[in-house]
Length: 179
Image (cartoon, rainbow, N blue to C red; front, top):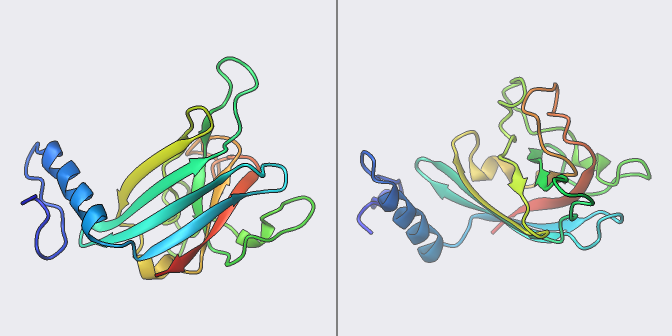
């Protein structure tokens, strides 16, 4: 796996996507994550559970997500895409109208418009209620998001609506804990 440099950065070379995949695999297999969030569904979605892992790299932060128990579509061509964001709150508690109200708003230390918030993540595409996702971002460092929350939404993020993409209800949450 020569593409993972000794300094911890990816170096796939021009058009070397296989090398980048090998480098990512090496990073995951040889290094523990620096932070984890254990995801749990709301009272209305108790079957949702999962893990979001954060790995530091000189190129940014590799975010790996694995979730099960996501709602199944109720009709053919029904929604299987769910918005996912890092929020600036520190708790997965809430009230009767919003079970994760205390998770706060999207993590946005740069005061950028959506979808350029530091906490804006790619959506989860569920297959039979399960989703897996990996993304490398340079919008934040792992230390910056420890103690923040991750939210999974009922609907997809439209990447346009302000302030947060019109993703619907918060259906699952986890607090990012340092390791």
